[in-house]
Every structure is written in C-alpha cells, then in structure tokens.
Image (cartoon, rainbow, N blue to C red; front, top):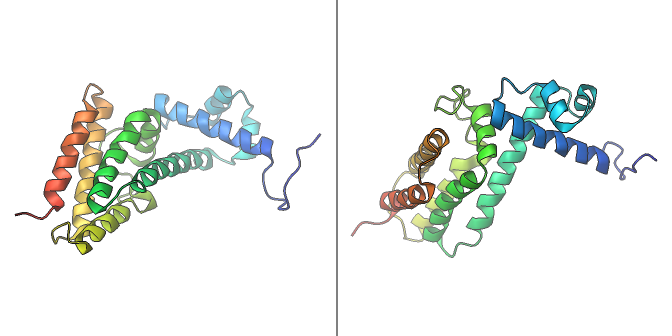
Length: 207
C-alpha cells in the first residue's frame, strides 16, 4: 500500500521523510569519521542499508545530500542556542548564555562539529575558510550583535562597535573549539569559563 500524501502532492510521505533522515544521519556519521572527500554516495548508501539509486532518488547528488546534512546540523545548533537565550533574565545573562551555549552544543555534539568543520573549512580542522564568511550562517554574528546592542541600550554595556566585538567573541569561541578538536584533552568547561570572563571584560562598563 502506497503511503498517503497530504494535500500538497509534492509533500514527501512519512516513509520518504524517514528515508531522507536516515541518509542525513548516515552522512553526518561518515563525514565526521572519514572526512568530506572520502564520503561518497556509495559509502552513504552502504551505511544506511540502501542502494545508491535510492540515495539518488531522495537527493540528486552528493552536494545536495551533504548540504542537507550541514543545514540540519546548523538548524539544531541554532535551536539549542536560542532555547538557552530565551531563559536569560537580562542582557548580561543573555550574552553569558550565548557563550556557554556555543561551547556546550559543540562539546556535546562532536560529530556535528566535524561536519561543520569539514564542510566549511578548507584545511580540515584548521582556520582557512573555503568561502570567507561562510561559517557565519543563520546570522550568527548579527544575533550576538543584537544582544550586545540591547545591553548598550539598557546601560549595562559600555559603548563599542557591536559588529567588531561580536566578531571578536565569535572568533575566540571558534579558536577554542578548533584547538579542542585537535587536542580533545582540553578542558572545555574551564575554557568556557575563561571565554565568559573574556567576554564580560570586553563589554561591561568599567568603573
């Protein structure tokens, strides 16, 4: 029996959505362990227990499938951060929550971080972007800049250029995570505390 579709004939069926998710999860696992270049459609099909033709039915190319995997990772990352920001009681607490959430998600989701690294960086775990600015998906620095602006307007933070400071804080977080990926013995909890102090020293009013 063919699974029923909704009112939209182009809407995927439940089975199709499940298969797509199965392929995305296999892709994330393979990219995180083998790297992007070694993650072929054949390898993804084998990991998912499907044929290569089935992979191509759901995603017409490796690029489309890996982009879908990256998009899912970033959406989950963004939702994790947004949930924690929603619990903050003020601008200062929101910025602290942002720093902690950025580190916390990546600490708990190393495979997903590898996908971001492999997909967006040209030197596999290093610092050179394939496309400058491509790591700033979903308006990452803009979101932090909005938090900083809110704090300035509330009189909590000193006057500074919010774009520059948002980029600096984001770069500091990225640098710590890049080091941790290569040196997993780094104490990320301690690093998060240092980044929190670093951020507050950069933005709070000085006596």
